[in-house]
Length: 218
Image: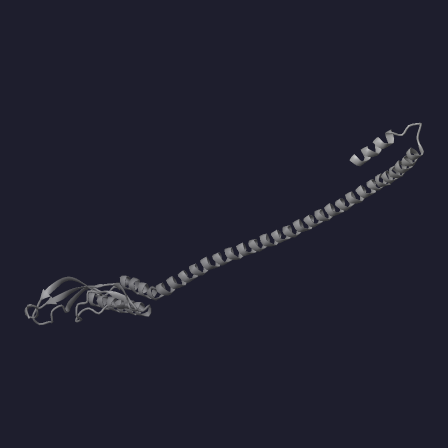
């Protein structure tokens, strides 16, 4: 801009009475003017080329962004679909587990109750029977034996009591009987039978134990 102003000031000094030197100077300024015009003529093409290049670069960037967005959307859709599948699998597994537990419980209850059904049948037959007291007693004893067999099939066995030494882990003493015939703390009477399943105690046996003064004093 400053250079063009210098040129204009030099051109403004040209008058009608010009010397040869001034004429030569004028020719020089004309040449400079031509050079300026050429520079000016080249400017718009350069600007257009620069704008075109910028537009192409911007378009390429937009295309890349659109492609990246499409890729991200596809990945998101895949993740959503996978999550939905996992959720469905989890729900199915949970429902299957609940059903398997219910089936196992029903099977366990059925296996436990089945041996006692025949016992119930015999009780009903005993109530309908018309016999003597001795016959009724014999029938009840048979039913009791059948009940014990049913419990034994479930690995439920009675706790040893009468004749055994008192054991607070499986016996509950309700009283004592003073005697000199039996060892001290021996179980003499069973009031309520105790039971265990395998080695686990279901309930202790209620008993009365011997109290031998001679052995206590010793």
